[in-house]
Length: 269
Image (cartoon, helix red, strand yellow):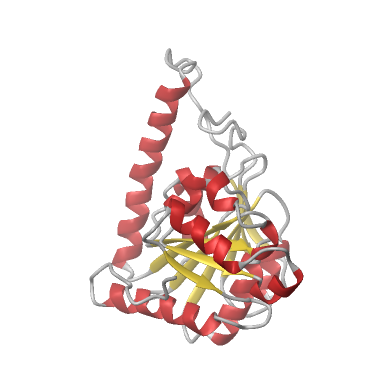
């Protein structure tokens, strides 16, 4: 069992490439083995530190591997149903960027098949009982995906506002999506997730006329937790704000190509 979040022992993790016809290609089961003889195994804090330290080392290895290829990685996180996959489908269709996608879900190839239908390279990682991706899973996903040099790799993390915030995948930037239908208080309830965000996307703004909330409430709560994150309201379904999102991704790739790390210039509220 994962000592950090108790989400399972990793034995059910599967990495699956998805072919052009939407069928799985070369599934890669990869059970994890833990040393239960470790005398410190009962000390949760000690184990959490060890797990996260090991993950961070693997994340740095991912980061170096990606940098050698000139690739950037966006760790895309949210609660279930916020619109991550819809955002990616529209981005693939409209943004003039060399995209590749790693999909993270506990089960099914449903989202990977949606991405594959756009013609974008995609690999599915199924975590089984696990509630987040980690650097090791991401490394195996990258190996299966084999992104071409200069790609923008978007990792659609497992839908969860808690555990994914703890695990560095080797990403270049972290993006958190929250939808207006979730209400305005998610940043206050899940501050760790929003505190680590480089960009917060507020999706489904087209539904605001039908909801009993103001966009300003969401913005205020994001700012209360993270005053420096870029913030962009948009509608992945209707297209509002998407051009600015594409611009943010484009500046990120430009910055990487120029060997510096500041994407800069994004909309702030």
